[in-house]
Picture 1 (cartoon, rainbow, N blue to C red):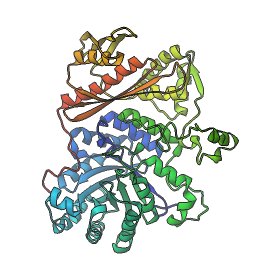
Picture 2: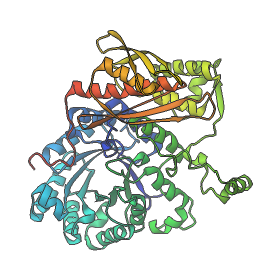
Picture 3: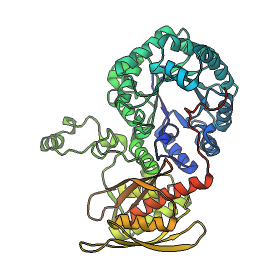
Picture 4: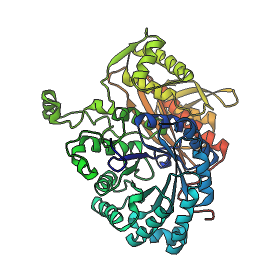
Length: 536
């Protein structure tokens, strides 16, 4: 039986740091959907959000703590600046969880102290034990992070960490906040902490890092070799700027190369026991879910979960794989839950067979979600005749999105051709229940549809990204559309799937506009965790 010292704890921050990606804002229901998927995946800790950011974020963390943070489930963590009000709100939000954690932080690099915090090292050394101690009044499980640790003076960092652990921090997290360090430097930093913080054995060493130089995963793996036992990461590597270390890459690196990493965790080199608690067969489904709900598309050549990750174009590679897959594949696609494009259902299939197949694919839908998905399945089956697993995933991911349906697409009709002016007519049902119809001419059918929708909705916005891809091969394949639009410096995403790409494009646009309209109705700008407004 492994212990926390000889295994790697996976701390997922998709719902906190990942959500800070421009356009990736999630509502409470979407966060809960992802949290449930993360629990099935087997992550040890879910950083569910930053409760002080807004009332909506507080309620989302609280709901996840109550629904997902059940006995035997993941630890539910809330982020808090080293401020009493932040910590109090975090403590209240995680209260329903069987296992809760407060993650508090303050910067320690000189550049942050001088220009952001306007505080001295002495000030920080006084704040850290006080705030960690205050966090302990809400939960025994308190994590402390010295923000921008990778650019902090090591000697000062050692002092701060010692003070945090003495005050009761059970985990100390070492963040490469700006993605600046290299693997050798990061490994040396962790090794230095192990050697120079007297009470370090009383806490788990964690690492957090951004991918600005494309080194986050490599940095983390080097940290593991030098004593780090918790990795803070996100699904698909999403996050601010260039993103975070990708959970799927870290987990599969530790899975495929576990015999290499075993000795660094005090294990027998030949042990085949996994180094994490992750159910790797849930990786692909979780990746797809996060991509669809956030509107953050996965690049085709993305390691582990990209569509090309297990594809072979070269004739030499194809020949080798046909003879023995180990010639060019270091892992089996099934190990991440990527099933073959097996045709499983048709238009005559019933609800029972539909539900059964979804359960085998790892989806647990309530009755309302099942009804919506089944109606879409029947609609697709009438057009495609046969429906694959990938089609089912696209249908479910499209239907379970919890974007409030403020505007609803009732009709979209286009006219276009080689010598015709692309024209679109749309009918929308407004939040007031009124049906409005308008038409527009565009440079192409999608442009015409979007212009017609804008004439009805009448909310200024700028379309900054439009992407379309097929779910499966064939002329009757479902198409997935992801769009991102900007309004007053904030980005909103939308996603939809349909056998008709024009319809999918219209629905994706309506999805993004509903997010935008909902945000305008709330008129609440969430606080960023790195904002220093407020008193200590």
